[in-house]
Length: 182
Image 1: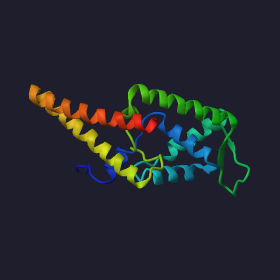
Image 2: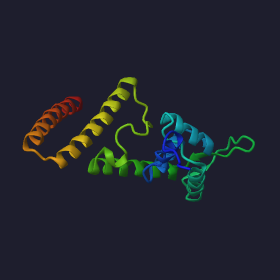
Image 3: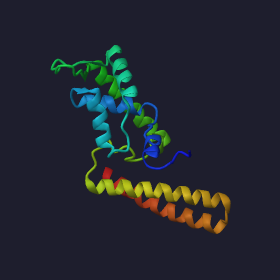
Image 4: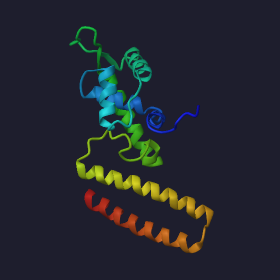
């Protein structure tokens, strides 16, 4: 019997995340307050609008490692049978270092290094910014199609036209950045 490649199968296949992303988001969520493993999984799923729900097999070993490493400790307000974790001072420093490294790598490699803007939806964007993230994903898809098209037929005319469009758009965006930083 042929296994269908639609629906939940593809959702599971797309549920994997770049290495280190789970650790970063668990640390980030724990910095907001005490959370259990299931609360962390549910919050990540909610914040990613169902696009990613880490498995217990990845969350609980990570929580054990964070606890053993001194980055977290068990919260004092435990409910019966529910272990909640909080960041220690060492964990807060670890998160700061982690965020600094991510920022440096993002500057060096660009946003695609971490899956692109808004891929996992962990940042709390206003509604208008979510529309912008949708436009940026669309731009990425169109850019990829253009690159594939140009690689098949690298005509000078198409290449020149695409380059002019991109240079004009980039110049406008760089001007916006400069204005907003002033």
